[in-house]
Length: 133
Image 1 (cartoon, rainbow, N blue to C red):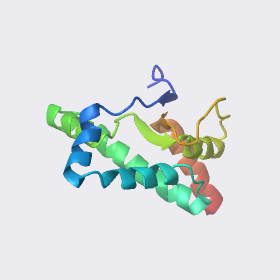
Image 2 (cartoon, rainbow, N blue to C red):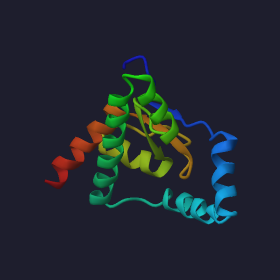
Image 3 (tube, helix red, strand yellow):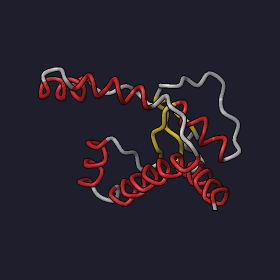
Image 4 (tube, rainbow, N blue to C red):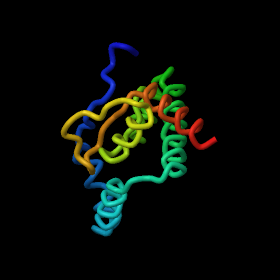
């Protein structure tokens, strides 16, 4: 775990993952994508941040448990969930790092996708739970 970087920038989606939904929905899927990008720029209140972290950590742990076999790894790859990281937007990442009492790196972009190592996300989750009681 120590040899994995704490934060990485998520690479872009393969072309087929973007084109298949567009073909199936006849282009309507782009409206949902625009809405999703807009939501990723919003800041969370403490309770919303706790819920978001809870869900992302839950999915990450499921991916880690599935990674013991090839079928599980394939399922995780298809769903886009990483066994060692949780995906956050720049805005979400800044909020989570603040809760973990870690300085945010310079140049975070609000809507960009980042991967945060799960142990740092768990630190923030525990700190937030203690703060909220």
